[in-house]
Length: 317
Image (cartoon, rainbow, N blue to C red):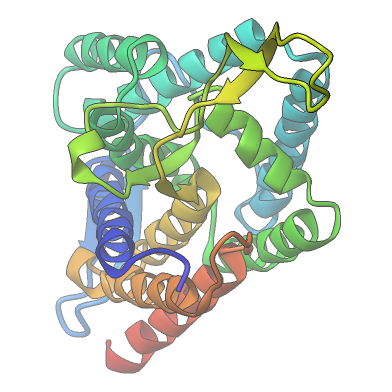
């Protein structure tokens, strides 16, 4: 088992909560939904615009997955460049802006956009500069709902399925072959700016964020084995013990949420909940059978959960 039972269940529960909250956010952006009174199925759905002057990309729904995939690849390349040149300030700025935008979109579904902007800025600043596990995971629960509210309206089911398949293949390659996904995860964790869920093994650490051990120099006595030589002081690096955490990448939350949001175009909110439930089961099974200290691409398993959940929706409704 990848993590202990309690931590695994908490991680899966927070993942499921992020899916449900995300679907609520997407639903808040529905300005009109026409339902056939005889079949109970959605005939047409219209979405309201985004706050702070944001516009959704104007692309053909069936080919929108290409646009998103290219954006993911470009973002990955930029992050790898920042890792290579250790441009931590640039990474912080990028991360801060992305969090503010996504949270603003998410909160605007429930409150006035100016209130949403204020809340987004406050939470983003705390998340970046005074991070702790509680604020980190709280914001992550809303961030992907904001992201889904941007992309769901420009996609159809074909594009959503194609995106899941391609992202799953990419995830397998990036984790098992090139291993750059592992490198990116370690970089984000060390910078304390991780895009995704981070659950501490001990709930006492909930308001702390120290996901990796820190290093510091101390003076210690090093004694030579030879009796003729005197002992001398030397500088030695000692690594402090870090807080153990269970993590789940942001893409593993965002992509299944986008898929479920697209399916919700043709079904009611409560009907689509079968998809995040199936994804949660798939994630739990992955974590249950996974080995400690090994990295696994989660998207292939979560994507399978998405498709099983969608199959159940088609079968039952």
